[in-house]
Image 1: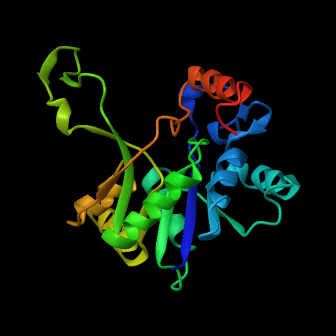
Image 2: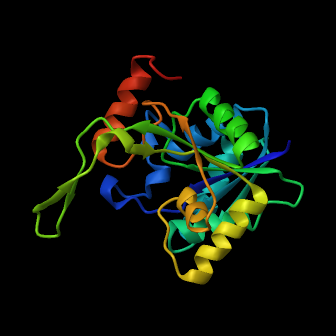
Length: 232
């Protein structure tokens, strides 16, 4: 079973602030994208990785990867991203080969994904064709109008917070994204493209530490976890 990874790092990450795109923000002295890519390569099942970045960051990213002792000799490839997450994922899919059986798609902004979770998602996709990690929602979730009035409260028992990595059979995810593009859909994650294509998606138990770096407080938490040795 051949597995190829796509790591999405083309977003600007405006909510994080700073002078560089989020994927290149420093987390305890090391760019976020390098920490994430090293986690991906910690799984021997993954044979190659395509890193999707913005045009302005191609040279910077290539220099970082070639200079990094843990990554410079790994089988990585850079790909130019698109204007949306969906377009970036589809461009990443252009780089996968017909010999790839499964495609893993991961957000560069999740640097603490464990090898164990990656393997569980891969194994679930082997059985179910499409698998994503998720966690049951802990907070009460309400639908709120644009002028900030509560419209209704959703039943929490069936609500899950979905993470990445998301893993799919190659033929399925390629067809799902092509379908989304034809229909003009702007999907927020790759599983939604598969859902809109009419195929089921299996949910694997995720991990709390696999959080997404989005706002400055997330950087503080990430550096605290590293400083205290809670994550490697």
